[in-house]
Length: 396
Image (cartoon, rainbow, N blue to C red):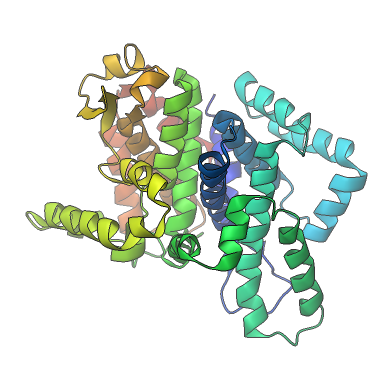
């Protein structure tokens, strides 16, 4: 299922510039935009569920979000106006082109996700939440461009168009709340700041990836692994969003590279305690009260396998139990160890891609060889991780 060519196609979005026909104070890339969009979609969807008693099919929403990401990875060279024109006037032909490219490198499970998406109704609540998140993330980017040089030709027109697109979704409670600019907006601002924190600290790489983009890429890898082993709906949801938010604390602490974090005795524990304190004091209070416990569940001890039994949180050491006894919605489980593997797969791809592109400092070489050694003969939930890594090494 996890074809190396498919993963490298998805990772190529870290090199797709956005707004490259505008005067920009910073670079924007597609991978970051897709991550920002899914963060917003989670918040909009959960607000809609909690405050309006509607039901969102989260498995479908996540499927649709990942398919839209795959779609954009294929049509990399189309500017948004051209892309939207083709979607409106030549949707069938564009769908067939993307399908032809993707179906050569994905398995039947992913093919069925793509087919479900292109045949779905754009007015489905899940699609509307994603569309609203898309326009909000685009407007956030363009706001920086607009403030930098509002006199540029066409900028005012673009601003008015994006504002009108967002207005079409004011029936969603979360969109109205974000328009008011209260606490939920501040939560999203903290998430968005992770666009500007680069991975691997001072290690040069091409392409560079942000913490925000990495989080989403790990979420997509977790998504694929969860499909591969057959995660139940609740785990599917928890796994994806735990992965999407797994480095969120770095918005408050900044990225600390592993040699420093684990090279000083006891530092990792001190940092973990500090992270938990700032999360409680500065991050969770920005969310509606009914979402704070869930976010805490996502980001505290994110790489542990855990479940709830009679409302009590329990960690699970036996992975066989996680895929057999506890793979039901009633346990509200998270496959933290699977997310950790996805995190390492993401790091491997970041290192391998840069080495292939000719920027190969010793830190990247050591990371790549270290992961190959770490996962030699390793399987999780009957998924051969060594085989995936070897495929990634050969497939670049």
